[in-house]
Image 1 (tube, rainbow, N blue to C red):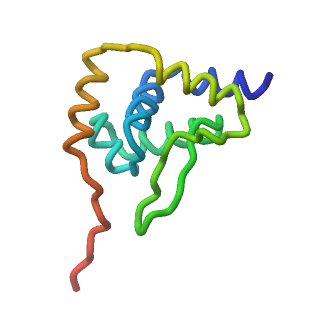
Image 2: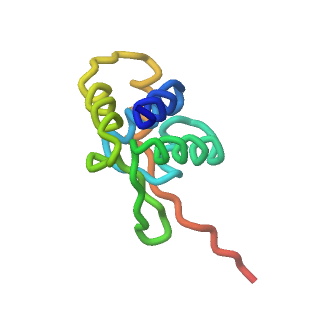
Length: 116
């Protein structure tokens, strides 16, 4: 029961739903999600942590980036079921369409190199 409650709480926020819809398109790093949703790094990171703790996402290191994706092998079966529902739910929303358009233009941004 706790897994269901945690997953439902994680999905009760518009930003987290937008992040999930983006990650249903493809895996992304924080900078790509920032660009797609046009929000700050701290806001993205905070919401990714909540989604990951709820068993909805997984992360892996890829070079200098941490890449996030849907965790289809989650131990939280409720999280998988809710993600499937969201994946198959036909939501035609202006905000989500804008997010997808920005995602297509997003790119990974590397660390800034300090010059001496």
